[in-house]
Image (tube, rainbow, N blue to C red):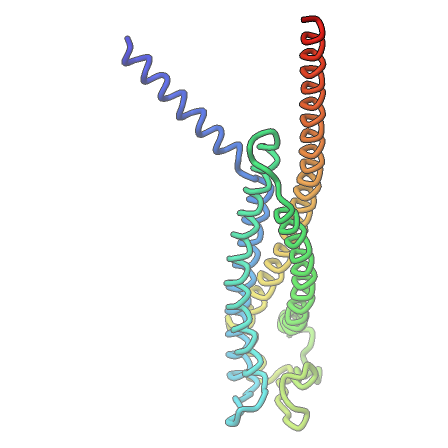
Length: 278
């Protein structure tokens, strides 16, 4: 009988511990972190593969060659963007962890308002710093989203032309990468409708795959923007709660001090009356 009671108490203690741990998880920050990781992973992975597909299309169908010298050509720019993608993936992986940690500490500060945990000025400054940093990152991701929409628009035009080749029979329509600044003006790297290169490019998997990869990268950048906005709402709410908690702490401290002073005054007067009576 005693063993069954001990087992029941142990199970009850484990259940209460699990409920307490689950209650301490900052779910809004967790949702924003998952959305951020998903968006960054989609943008970085699909963007990297889409850039590789762009290099293949330029080399195979437009006959664009890499500059033998260390010139800033389109291939060098693509390599630079790939390294930027590596940095974005690493930086936002760490930033997501930092925001989750901040969410845990802020939630603990709010829930332990009447306990021994004290909210410091440094904690409020850290929360304000994260709000400012997240706002800057949100603007940066808006710029990334706008920049990613450019290749989506270009590939959509090329893909749309390939889908309407029967309508364009006999038309003198050419695709010229010089219009987008991909190659210098002096180099003519056009692919005209009806040519063998045009049909090969339209029938290849590179064009269709690269187009859809850029769309996925654009969706990932949009998801990262939504995650940043979600983080801003969570951080702003947490900062407001922490600010109110600090005011509540000051009020409780003043109230406790006044009650102690009244108690001391009452004790002193009682002693004086007792001495006077004796």
